[in-house]
Image (cartoon, rainbow, N blue to C red; front, top):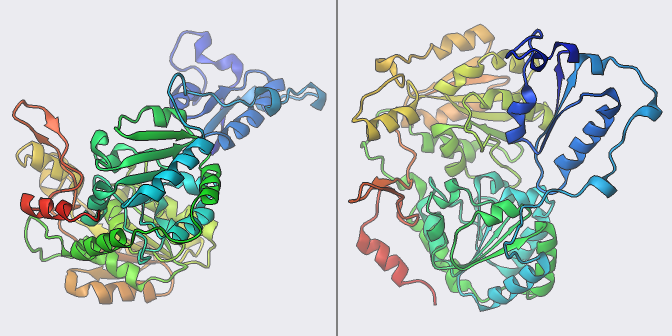
Length: 513
């Protein structure tokens, strides 16, 4: 992404006067943007404007892709000069991306592919974990072809869910801090784990990086040396390079037919059937309100293949949108995965509508707290005739904050629910004010018909889903304080609510050999 921002004219810079701000609406945006971009620069001379824009675009698209920022003062914007005076960026001489490889011993893609092909021939329980980097590299289709040819079980990170349909016999969900139980057990059961295009952040490893894939030899392919260098895992073979090149080389060295891993696939299928998400019991007991997992499951059952799903980037709706939605071919939840910023869903829905086409139906899943932060986008949706079906999970506050306060502060709530100062408006009146059709789902019995009504009503729809603030995003790996007073992460393979030790021991005692 390229950001172009305007700045006050150079004569008005605060830095010339030793004050924080001098020019009207002046802000040192480059100092703020530099830590979170690949390239951030203030254009101080008119002749350098084209150079910096060209360099920014090149850097954004090469190496590990990322955002860039060019800040242009007002007088630079209006400057006149001959085209021959403009400085140009030459990628041939200046285009090398910075490397953080240092003294780390990384395999190149050729050696990494050869090693992986050898390990696949020897493995009895191989598993591929796919990340968004695979799509970014344009390698999704050849990778799918290879995995179907080999018949190897596959999992994907939340940002890569669209690579496989939920019901694909090779697909077994997403591992991580919050995950369907079987997905985590499968990762911890594999004897070979091949990670393509995922940086293995803490949400995936559940803050227990050293134990991730604890029974497996691990091959991790990434284009960013810093992401590989940060990994502290035993039995790790880090491969530095473009994942598209790796997939191509691996495909050329693998067998033409399926690997002999049928017992392993059957083991994975048995786990998936044994631990369905909807069978997980909320620790607070039965609730009179609508269950968010059941709502999301119903939406996925009733939606069309060409529907676009936009989910909240934070809290319960984010988790449900990725764990309970059963994606069809080509579908992937659209969300902001990095920051968990509240209020993302509505403006994202507007962008998704224009990107996908205004004829497409959008399904939006958002929480009542986040919904308020960008409520003005309801008018934008209405103005452009976007066919958005907006499901708002109304649990009366900020559930993530309330849960944290329950767990760590003995239930002392501050600014998290109605009793501590947070209240929510009447959604039906909001729907009327913006000219939306309105649907309410009050409990589980109304989910199927309510979803059908919302999806079947022409034009924009606002659907209030009455939920429980005690609804918890389980299964999840939770930390605890040990006898030494140190907070430690729970085992990835046994997320809360915990299975009995005897049951876990029995599962791992029957791993295919």
